[in-house]
Image (cartoon, rainbow, N blue to C red; front, top):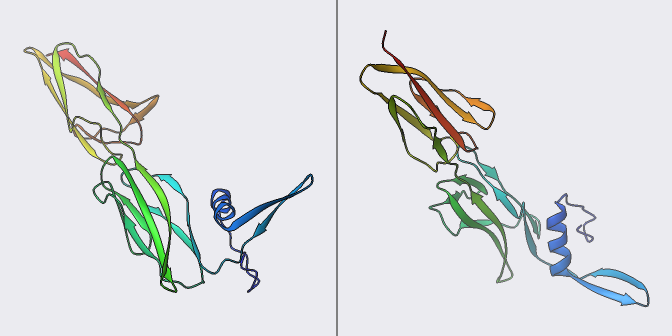
Length: 196
């Protein structure tokens, strides 16, 4: 809340807790506890403060700032894992983590807040095959959205019967021996049958 201008900003509970921690004084009088807000002249709060971003998706971060209209600068601690645009749009690059920092400079002082971003990867398990061999490329773990190619090689006298990919109990579409990695671990199963 900007008391001077009579404005209330919508922010998450986690962000509000951060504001109270950094900009308040907890006072106890007898059995009564209350929070006295300091006179805040400048601050920045990033929402959310932590997030998981799957491959093939993006995350738009929001920075609430005082004074209103302050120019926000964005930076990623590990652009090899996740990048951030000058508007706070996070794009995953590879499995891992990165700290996204938003900052403003007011009166020569820089104020910062962060979002801890995790980019997950998912495993590919090959079910045991009889009368042939199976390989996948890439072998995994993979980001969601990665195209995976299945190579099924039958033994002499056999042909490929069926190729299936399951994410738990959910079937993943396979076309031309390829599928798009979902945001889940998968199992690839190939069956072979005798020719003719």
